[in-house]
Length: 421
Image (cartoon, rainbow, N blue to C red; front, side):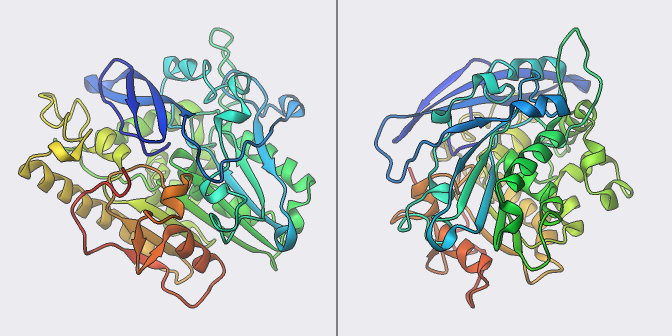
């Protein structure tokens, strides 16, 4: 997901920002206890101003994946985009997993099949531009610009963890996300990825969660002499209380994991100790991740503020509606509630900081969702900076193990703010 403001209204919301137009299609999902969640189905980016470093990369459909049962929700074959490396980056690989939320019911998943988030038939190469961490410009992406760069297109709605063999002919829905991940990786191995000198599995939003959940599986592909790490942007969805003091979003993950049969593809050390849906949360999965991970996140992540903290059922009077869409409209009391949410997030984030000096993080207080895919956020004069360095610089220092600080949390400007308008 990109850093647009999320609407929680029942109708579609059209929000024009400075460099792009996001069209959000929403549906309300009814679950137990009359819990309603506003779930983002589609974010279509229409670039209408020239963006430096934008590069359209051809899309590849893996037709042979259908025979392996590795398919999108509608049964169509999975897809990826590949931009070959060059120069001294030709033996390095960056595999980036696209974001796009989840689906927790048959109706919700069926709606996704009408979009690129559920069907490769709806995908276009122009849907996903290679900017930010995927840019091929040295001045815009100094650490990874000349690597083999891959965008794994996301079309299953379970952060690529689903794997149910049976297909209900009444719905024709296929819950096969884990197979999609496996078959795309196999395709890349066939292109030479197994011989990589350096490899990075990255992702944003639901893709950022996937990069955590699949991190050790990715590492297992390579010889021990390959430097392999994982990077998650806006994927640290926290198990925290909402405005009502309850954990209502937990019920949503219960449904996602059950519907997709995800439990078998979560960390078994975690699922043996607690219910599988809790292991969908990074704070409960991270203790079992052995591969080095970097977390890029905002303590005021807009998706989490709008869909975990201040959901309609947690705020039935709608008092937080304007505030969660535009922090400039927040009252003093609402700002305090956001700061309390920040504190809870940081407490949930403690587990990511424990146990390994090989981990890194860049945690700011921007009111945004997703920062690595956009050039102005990844590296630019207006980029968020900690310790006088932009995100791209810190991530590069961490990956190459340069002797610089790579575990950074903004404890100075702690109020929620827009880092880039």
